Image 1 (cartoon, helix red, strand yellow):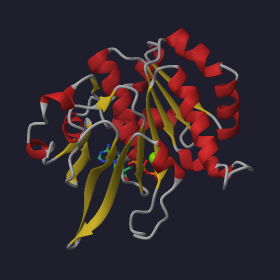
Image 2 (cartoon, protein in one colour; image 1 turned 135 degrees about the vertical axis):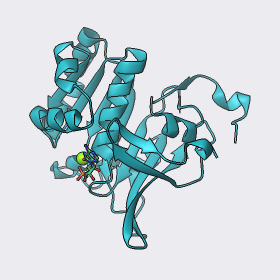
Image 3 (cartoon, helix red, strand yellow; image 1 turned 30 degrees about the vertical axis):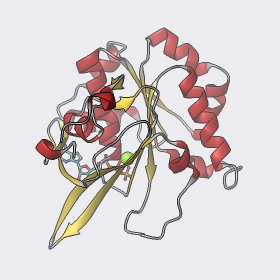
Length: 236
Ligand SMILES: Nc1ncnc2c1ncn2[C@@H]1O[C@H](COP(=O)(O)OP(=O)(O)OP(=O)(O)O)[C@@H](O)[C@H]1O
Ligand SMILES: [Mg+2]
């Protein structure tokens, strides 16, 4: 299905072809992305691919804020997918910050990241993962406020924002969380059983300012990252 022309205005493609088709061309300007799914569904890899393609296709320097993986492990995982993250860091096109949620928040609100954005000309940011904010002492009722603070601070820098979040999609009655209301675009990933085999599925749950695919698409992870298999119909 071809999206209507007025649906294509001012899009910022993520740089992942099948996924951009599902998003009817990419993000309406300023949309933040919440990427959620269970363990091993491919959240970190999709985040890395978003940064890698941003650099390779659009010359857009990116920042990866990780609470999970030290740089040497990300370099190793990227290498296995055919990406030279060490080289990108060396060339100052990619910045990896391995930190804690409390230090991240403090730096964010004292313009530490603003300075980095200006110094590196950053255009994209990935935060992996939001779930770690739950370890902060004032979580709970403050989740909405906390997430809004992070979003506002990153939006000030006019970055394309992608944040990952752990979500057990096998649990059908999981409560909807503040992040899901506040994020502009929600992408959800599954790794479910189809017969005797597991299959990877990706879907768009929300896309402010735009129509989007309503289909769960199969994908694989291989050299080069995620590949959406039903690419011809991805827009539908
Ligand atoms: N080089 C590779 N080739 C093919 N598949 C790979 C490769 N590297 C990782 N994978 C697949 O991707 C999965 C890990 O993806 P990723 O780390 O992005 O998951 P995640 O959603 O971030 O998980 P978690 O919530 O545990 O951090 C692995 O379990 C494996 O199935
Ligand atoms: Mg991960």
